[in-house]
Length: 216
Image (tube, rainbow, N blue to C red; front, side, top):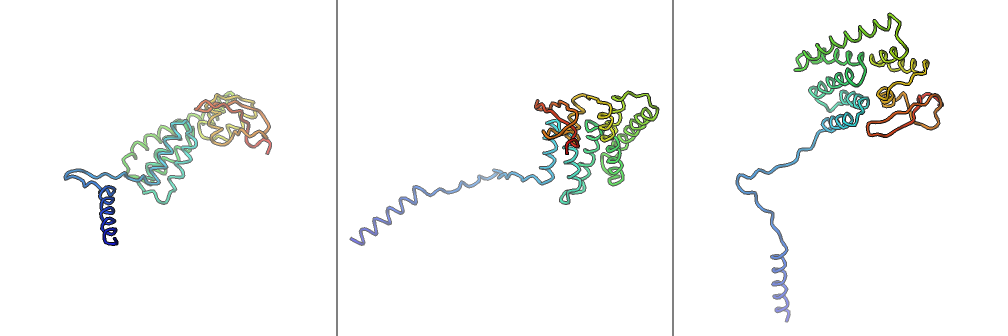
């Protein structure tokens, strides 16, 4: 009986092993085995910048690029690309002409042989011309409070622009209010006091905001 039982058990185990065990298919000759590359911290961060820009949040994207430039794990080439892109944003929708010029100065000095150096020099010359023109208008006087607000804001003198806005009881367009909200001059905290402004975010969200320093 023991012999018969043992024999039958062996047959059963053999059958189970045959029916349940799977072998990995061997790659046929000429078939490439692909592996998905893991993005670096820099690539992930730049992806975040793209997402922020797509969502219309230029100011936070600029701050993210500033963080990237100081990232120790980033290569010099990656830092150069982040610095150049930050300069582009500041001179564009970021409305920070002085900041853009400073970024280009740093880029040209640090990466003189970069493929974008000549472009950076041309951008800086144009930005300097714009800054000179805006400064001349401000020094000449005669600008309305709103015109002075826009000139200061464009230069990147956001605090001065905010002071003009408050002192003159201005209600700038949504684009300016959105920038001020993203930078941190305007907040939607309920405990704040002072004048109220309505700002519409790129996703359609409407917020009632006030100057962040009021009511603290």
